[in-house]
Length: 244
Image (cartoon, helix red, strand yellow):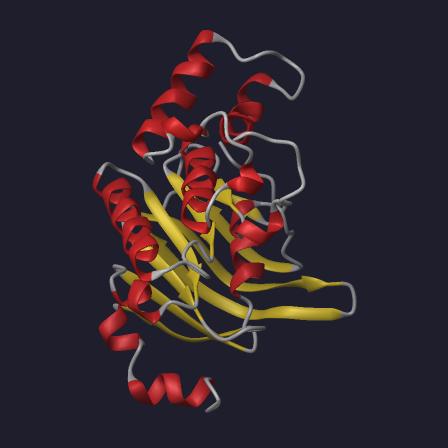
């Protein structure tokens, strides 16, 4: 049961939320980012975190993933497995001498440890994840040689290999062509249909509008949350995005 954040608690929400937070504050030394956030992430659904650069999307995702510690507030998870976190593609260096398969195998480290060789079960889980994401034929290729869409699918396969029912993704479609974006969005919808709760931070309003729920952030504060059709209105978006 995930409980890395000292402010978190394991109590499940009676309404079926996978994660909830109340009066959440977080940031970095001398630089507060999230300010008094209160919201719930519904289970078995796709939730989009939307907002301009600097709005706090990645920081909130990091708090939910347990890689950033909240400074105050309450954070709770339903009783289940620890979350799987898929960072932005740019967070994984192109120069690292990793094949696609080795990258996916990193998703098994929490189960087997960093230095132990993959067991038969680990290999089976990795095979299944790569097949699910359509990257099984890329296993021997260097990660830095892959296209943006291929690389993103490899990183999602790494998240899938962690076998969590909560998948957190930071900008999974940024920088991809329309076909690759559509493929990633379709894959994420399939994961939700199979029982995974997906939370993605995104600039892609089309992807956000296809989600089940949306949290709209601006300057570290929650502007609105609810169904995308009610949150991503022209009026709300015009208030937080300045014209180019």
